[in-house]
Length: 245
Image (tube, rainbow, N blue to C red; front, side, top):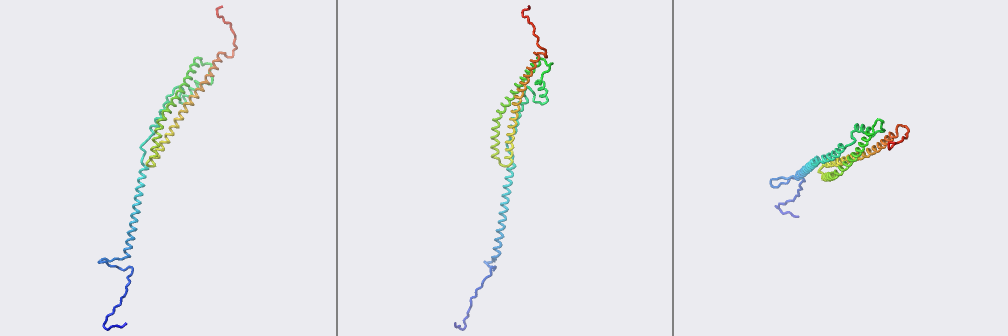
């Protein structure tokens, strides 16, 4: 290529800027590496804040659940259960005839239901004792039927109590309410078991007294027969004069 004298020639030179070069926009100078670092730092800070928020939410839920678990059941069937049990027990305590008290019962039983009658026991005393034994059997049967009637009466209240407790157990807000409802259900079951035991006691007592009365009847008949026949002295016939001749 020919050069013209006096001409000024220029050469374009490409300049490559480094990655961390500063760029100016107006009066603001931007550093790309700083910008990326700041964004990453902000992202990590935001993640930490989100974690703290989730942690606080979990703690709030735990406190709510704990409050529910500690909430007491606003229903109690214990008074009704005690009342039903007391009513049956009162019938037993009011029973007439042979006492339920152990020491008193033993002395009365030995007197009224003897193994054998002594020769000194009068006929009128044996008759009185027989009447008392009959009265004891009658009163024992009456007590058993009263307890049976009371048990039937308790069925209706037991059914209502069972329904209430099951409903409250199913709708329990927390562990404490569920536990209390379950405990009351167990108390109802225990009361019914005690009532069944009371009923069995009165029925067995009536049966036992009637059996003892039958044994006493046989012993009284034996003693009466012995006295009629005499103390081993053979019977001597005598002439009976009906007309004074």
